[in-house]
Length: 325
Ligand code: FUB
Figure 1 (cartoon, rainbow, N blue to C red):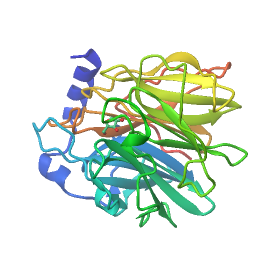
Figure 2: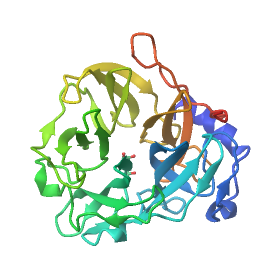
Figure 3: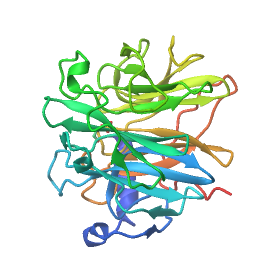
Figure 4: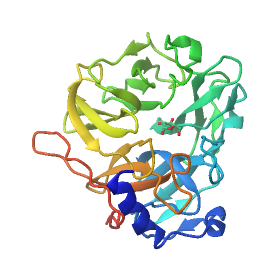
């Protein structure tokens, strides 16, 4: 077991909530470092800034203690104006909102366009074997969200991978000309352009080259004229990244951004800027005695850039970040 895990566990056990407290929902969550949410298990964060507020979207790990498999039926939404005090909103999207899907509310991301909010989410397809990507739409960042198509945007038979969980972990980036790109995939990283309506592909599915030891969890962001494609690498996963001047590549691999998350064999990141500071949002399995790969918790730490545009390795802390002013 990694030293980092031992350290995180022993630090967190000191102030973690009881199992009973974890089961309750709290509309406003007390600020107290990492993990930032302690009333339920949260995973696969994505985040979006809208009008001075950060909206954090997560998966919900619902596996009971000692059940070592993903039990995930819904996604969650939290908001904050300072990155420390988080308010939980009513569940805005469930797998059952996609009539064509069966289960598995896996990783997702919400993006804004023209006053609407589009939620791209990985689920198990109901009639074609394998994972798929759906898109839901809402007029508000907190929902309610409705299936925008009535069918999968990416169905399992649209890619050629042999594994059934190839089509997961969507991330969407809209460039300065208004062209939206969808990236996704396990083992192979795919991308495709989206039409302006955000609910249809606009061209062929392509493969991203230049991402060594790619596992899953792509996240695309931009900073000072560089595009960054961070992703989970190997297994257990660490987060690594590549840079490019173009969203269509070529991508240049730059190395490790964040190490293996304590007590979780997955790590999954979102990167945002807010009030003049860059943040790295991820998950680990370090909360409480029951935490682990299937009961994960979202954490936030600072992200810093070097002068040449490369990113410094993110230091995982239990203190987390200070309130943004
Ligand atoms: O939460 C289920 C899966 O685990 C996600 O889709 C992956 O990114 C990994 O975190």
